[in-house]
Image (cartoon, rainbow, N blue to C red; front, side, top):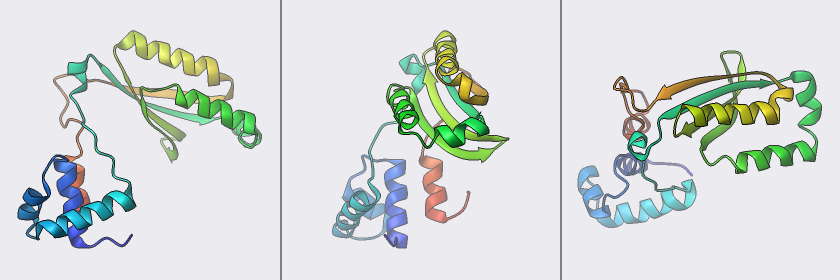
Length: 174
């Protein structure tokens, strides 16, 4: 999909407030309401937009957000990753982790995998790490985490997509 400037403005507006009406969004952007309705439907169909709420997790009793970084043992992973049993085992494990919001390959800090999880408290986080270690420890070269207390008064920018909306719309960080 080739996006026009108006599409970026619509997307940014929806990222800032997904409940905004087409009429109000049209007024903010300076185009007609039918244009917003038509282009919004196209964005939803072609970009598979998913509307969700990002709550204040600490008010839901979730105290920890954790970033997990790992590497597979190279000598094992190359051969294991090609087996369907290993792929099924990974898929089943991931499927059972509803507290994980992201699991991906990548690179940086000497690591090739990253995951982001939420935990009600430190003991739940420790139990999760133990589960990962038990299930995958034999195949991991290393596994490290960075944890954030969501109850902290030192969060300088809370988790929201509002800032990212400006970045996407403007094509640069603001």
